Image (cartoon, rainbow, N blue to C red; front, top):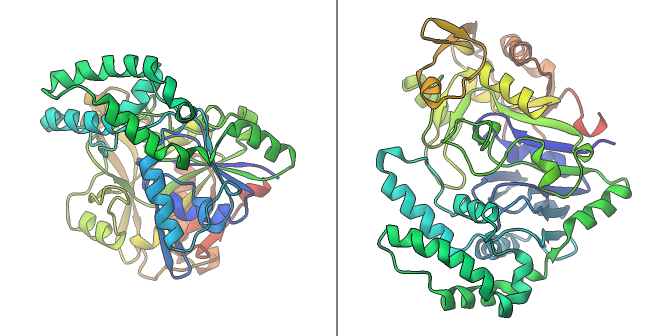
Length: 429
């Protein structure tokens, strides 16, 4: 049995929640390995809708769920999200949930700094969620982070607070803000410490034991490859590596553990926030797709920008992340269109590109080259086999497969878990 790593292969919001939930029902453990509570997943199980932004998706079905060391953790949000799920009847305890004790914490001062920077940026806003994720990663790399394990040693935290506050006080002064209130920060940490510590442990050790027992592990990525700090549309990116290779470093298991890499891809393209978007539609078709696809961010509530499927960026994402197969979601949103378009390349200063260039100005200037296909009037919603799809929808899926040079492993035809066409089982590869 293979392990499976799930990543978004566009700009996030590809419908990973449903696919991860579907896979989690067949996994023995689900691991979040990067990002923070900026990763919105909506799960629909029966008549109940769950909205997660930090907890691994397996938690709603009682599957062992682990937050790896690559995640930055807001402990107050963690408590709030757990309490909300418990109110929906979900059981969460140390038997089915664990947090890496070397996870860096997102603190109130990180949220403050995130908001101050975005406000000051004016038209140059990156479009962060304002939740402190980026500043928390900065402190991790700057070796001044407070981590989960530090919550058990708050009485000896002063030297770390000295380093942390020396950095943040200087930044806050630049925004005409008062210095960090150290006593309030310590009081806040004392108030949340016991709640977090009940779940804290060296999860690499637990995962090693799980893997040795032959269990199936699902690694759950957040955001999308095009938001990767190295490989995304920099600087309009997130603050972590979102590619599949991060599953190894962000969980404490080696790269051989990541197994089958499943890239989640919408049958069209969306993006939240600022940054280049070559196939963006600012017309009636874009508005129609956005409305039919309910394109609003799970975390932010912001309306997503919508465009045609871009085979260039997906092919690039699949190559960079070593994608074994893709899950194509939301094909039903395209039902009823007279024609559908796929971007197959870009024009830039009289040259044709078969990849997305790295420089921000070039990314903003490229013009998409489209291939037009005949649409389909029949409904694909709820289809559970390839034979249930209209002929033109099948041609569309097959053409995408050819252009991105990666096989389609499954097709999702509604938010319901069972409305999934399986061509290849990732766990059996």
